[in-house]
Length: 249
Ligand SMILES: [Zn+2]
Ligand SMILES: [Zn+2]
Image (cartoon, rainbow, N blue to C red; front, side):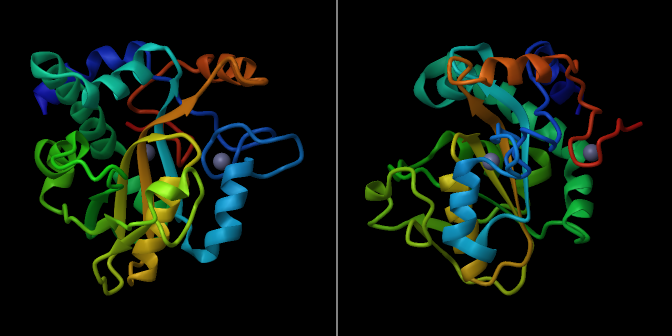
């Protein structure tokens, strides 16, 4: 755990806690919602299309702002090679490790389950073998590797679906009520993670909670810059709990 603390330490300088749900904040993904609406448009669409198939909890570890450090790292950990790639994978694996060590019990409490039996990832639509997220969650991250299972497979329709939430995007291995922690790197519209959740539930999963490393936002879009300014007022701390809205320890 010492190296996890060391490797994740620098992230406290630039990770940003998503704003807690409230007016103007999406209750599901913690992105922006139009005034008077409980969720953002993509989350509302996902709920319309997938019904009860949507996630029981969506937990972004941090905002990831286009062209800033964290969004950059979330791109580079899968698109660079050699020592640089290894450096970013180690760092992001430590972020996930440290976050889950502190807050996975809070996610379970939020979902009213004793814990998560199984951990899996949203597979990339391109179907690339040996995806770095797989390497991290199935191998590097202590709290997830022993529970990891390859459950989801993109269907032949996945590419063509673009950014639409759909039950036709993935298939899942059969489950018998297991609770699932579903991990993804970036949440933009949530269409991939919510479609994956719906496939898990259709296959028999119990509660499904989604943890994403970064909630992607573009500060140049609409009022996003103001939203981000608000979020930055709260200094990042590993102890701040986005689910119980208090500090641990
Ligand atoms: Zn949303
Ligand atoms: Zn917590």
